[in-house]
Length: 488
Ligand SMILES: [Zn+2]
Image (tube, rainbow, N blue to C red; front, side, top):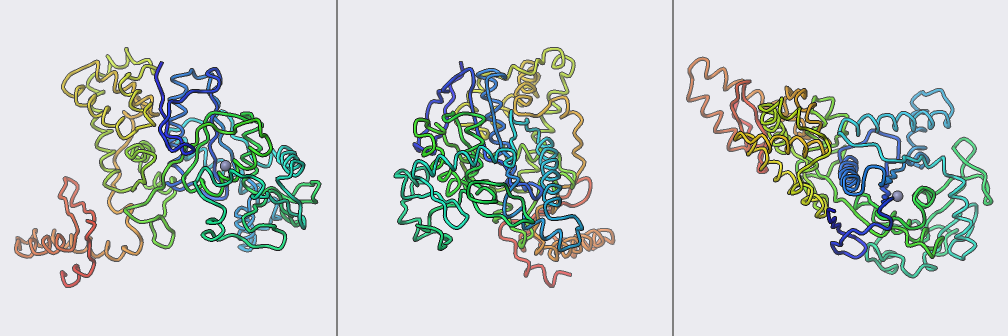
């Protein structure tokens, strides 16, 4: 059997993965709060834990892995977005808008994540369907002295749990000093967090022993994982941004409500995504949803491949250069497999990925090394090795690239400038104009002028490549828009 090693945030070491019950390996991953399309940063944990799901299914058997990923469909951000929609003329009442918004966003999420080739988890619970379980857990926490009711709220008493902060390695003292925490009269300690809070009549709310209200975000995951996976399960995953406070709070709630259970044995966190070296932000104009990229004609396969190209524990830079490399690799492999189309079709079973490739993935999901293995196979296949072509198709299939579909993928889009921030839009127009001027200069044999324009672009940090479809360009890291001025 393949030995899986996973880096455990809890112990800060790479450990041998030993499931509690190999007949039912259990994994929980925090899912999205549903009020908007998923951006590419949201897509990373989906692709990462989908790969782990596939690996676990391969090693323990498809029917022996339970993967839960929730939908947070009750949240202040959802309420705020619905209020915005109402202010913009939506005639429905707030609750109907919220229901419509969350249903719609869940459909979008499924659509977009499917386009990335990820499998649906075994269970996708909606928080609003588990309110009873949350109320029950809160009651247990109060009973055991870990939570208290105050002015319609219920708060978790962080001082009642000694291990609070162990996952992220923080001390309560430092947290109070370093974090922006809400100080409120109803809290005993500013770090105490909300388990339940009052809800106004126009917003979603449920009756509870503490009055009509709604749950805090953290209690949702504790209640849903308990119900679907039990008090102890194997793996809990999510983005690094969730480690504190969300995961600390989940641990505090679950371990205090069920002191005999261990909650999750292994904690896994994926690092964050940047775009072209900058933090994704709407104001920078480099904020992209998965749908934005799909709409620009970029195949889900390319997005997925780019995510694979960086190990999940390293920060990743999502760049056009990487998308181009992804496209080139996939096209190359497609060609190599296509050369042996009939043989591959005959021998492909869809469940027989090469051992060396699986071993690389089993070493803490080393997808970037996995891609190196694919390149090796691709090279062998290109050199006429039919066995390598079959292995390549199997490995690609394992990662969620349907090798038959790869034959149909259209790579006819142009990657130019897709990820370029809006604040460079003017620069982008200017570069296009300069390139047009260069074409004109060449047409009239004014090569001096054409060369001067080319040199001017290069000096400003614009890398120009002449292709069969005309000139393509990208910005170097030292791009300086000021140097473009005066070129025309
Ligand atoms: Zn969670």
